[in-house]
Length: 289
Image (tube, rainbow, N blue to C red):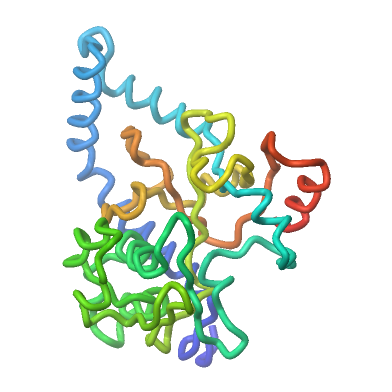
C-alpha cells in the first residue's frame, strides 16, 4: 500500500478495512455470546412448547441456523418505479442510496421517499453499522478514520430512541448532526471526509421463503444476490435497531435478524417477481450486472 492510499484511501479499501475490523471484533465476541444464544433458544422453545429434554437447545439452534443459511439474500423493488418513470434507469450496476444521491460536484442530495425520511434513514444507517466507540477513538487511529469515511450524519448512541420517532425534527433536537437541508430539496452532509461509495449495500435474508422476497414494502419484484455474499456479509437486526452485527458463522436464531450489508457491490444471481413483463426482467438483469 502506497503512502497516498493511506492518506486518501479509496472507497474499496475503506470497505475492506471496515469488514476486516468488524469480523475480528465479532470473532472475539462469539464465545462470550454463547450464554445469550442459549437463553434465547430456551425462551423460543418455551414459547412454542418444545421440550428441551427431548430437543436440546443446541439441536434447535443448528436447525434454525441451517434454515436461515438456506435463505436467499434479496433486494425488493417496484418494477414500475424502476423502469416506467419518465426518467429512465440508466445505471449500469446496482447502486445504494448514497451513490445515487451524489451530485456531479460531489455534494449529496438525499431525498425523502414513501418509505423513509432521508434524515432518519441516514442516522439509522450510521447507528446500526458503526460502533459508537469509533466516534470517540483517537483522531489518528484506524477506527476514527473509518468512522469519518462512513458516517454521514454524525449521530451517536444517545439518538437511538429519537430515530424511531419518524415525525420528530431531528436536526433541531440534535444540533450536533453533520446533516443539512431537507428531504424535499435534498439532504447533504457537512462531513467532508464522507465517502458515499464506501457505504454498505443492504439486502434482506429471506429465511421465511416469502414468495415475493423478504420485504414487499419496497415492491413485489426482487433481486436475488449471489449466494457467495451470504458468507461475506454482516447481519443486523432491522433498522433502526442499534444492535451489533453477527459474523456469518454465528447468526442468531431470532426472527428479527434478517438484514445484512454486503462488503462490496452486489452481484445479481437471478430476478424474481410476478408483476413484471419479460422486458422488465431483461432490464433488471442488465441493471444489476
